Structure formats: C-alpha cells, structure tokens
Length: 173
Image (tube, rainbow, N blue to C red; front, side):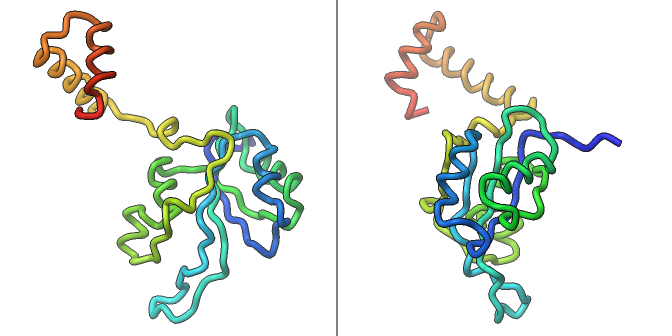
C-alpha cells in the first residue's frame, strides 16, 4: 500500500534529545524550516499546575512530495536517531501551523495557551510563510477587484503605470 506523500511536515524536538549544534545541522539539510521558540511554559493539565516537557515545534518544507518516514529518517541522520520520533503531514493550513509556533492560532488562543514571541521563531534556508499560504478563488477574486478598482480610481492605462504607481504608493494600499 502506498504511503501518503506531501511537501509540508511538522514535528517536535526535545532539547535533551538533540545535539548542541542542531540548528546548523538542520540548515545543512537545505530545505526551508521554521522553528518555534522553546515551548517551556505549556501546561499539561486543565488546572494549569503541571508544565509539559520543553520542546520545539518545527515546520519542514520538502522540495518534492515525500513520505513522513523519509523526512523522519533525514532528520535522524542529521540530528541522531533519538532526535525525532513522529513526523506528521501538515493537514491544516500552513498559516495556521505557523501561527501555532507561537500559540497564536485560533485553537491555541481558545485553549488559552501561553503565547510565545514571534521574534523568537528561527527561519532556516529562506523559509517565508507567504510562499506557502494558498488563496482560495474568493480571495483571488477580491484581490483582482481591488486591483481593478485601483486602476479605475487612478486612471492607470497599462501595467507599467500600475507598477510605477505601486512602487510610489503601494504601502498605502
């Protein structure tokens, strides 16, 4: 039976199971990776008395569709056999997974999870969340309508005029 393949994966890393130079080793893999701040204030009980074991959430973007097993093996080769056990395919939106790195996702906010700083997210190999957010047809239609309105409102005759206008005033729009 064929295993599912994907490009976007997530997994946890525990500080005691990874080498000191783990970020450099991950960078040498050569794929875009985003690493959460150290989650050391996550509470495991509803009463909020006990903290979970400290960990990092990691987003891994493969160059081509691959299996979760191949990603796990690649991480283990880079960081050691004990470094990672479970690698999961991202089934939610990449935007939501990225927000979860700091507990800013809707689910994490509803559960009142501790919020971590965005500035502490480590981005390796040119990870850019904007590359991985997909727009649905309605979003694309809205954007096209906005551009058309901009063209009409400012009497722009062609793409070159639109480009010059956006260079000069794009941040306003």
